Image (cartoon, rainbow, N blue to C red; front, side, top):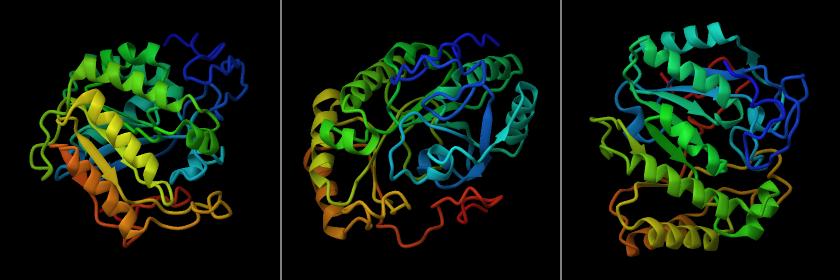
Length: 308
């Protein structure tokens, strides 16, 4: 594996330049030692990815985005949970996950460990692995690296969190998020096209392409409306879009109204109404969250209660 991208590290838009190879943590909170917080078949993704046997998720420790309301805060912001994994162990882990019958390998927040993942994907292809490889990300990706991601990945599932730079600054300390995420998304779509097939029943899981996620935030429906307008203008009505209602307050969000509460029914309805008015044809919506089955606790061996 070529480890030079870790020193100085320029793998994300923060461009921190830290010598992660020498043991210093980057803005992501991680050194060049690969750390994984959880892995296994997961039924909490969209039906296009979970199908009937689950998505083979691998959750990495650390994140360059640092949204204070992140549902994965125990591994993205707390910089503690996770175990160090060698390249050989990573390969065995991936093969073992594939053997369970999952429909894809789903790399969750992968960009800050991209050199490890790139090497693994190339090796899996050499092994004859055929299932789709999925890049599951915050949308806060370095556009210059998208072509390298696309050389290994079959599916992109980026968030598009913010169209409002002021909100982006308040949540993740980078007002550039909208422009960076939009450019990265343009490149992802250019590389892979829209999700194919788009089957909301999950009977025919996706093999290739792009689906965008957007989480509606309490008290910030205007941001969602701007996101929807922007995506419709840029990509048209056939862009596969998952409009999520599952926001839940995390400890860091509790002292920050309106992030201290769940999403209201009228707020989510306004988002759904706009998406339908704009004519999005490949739209996934959710009921308002009534259980915490897929709100993770990474201190448990089984973080998601909703998984079998």
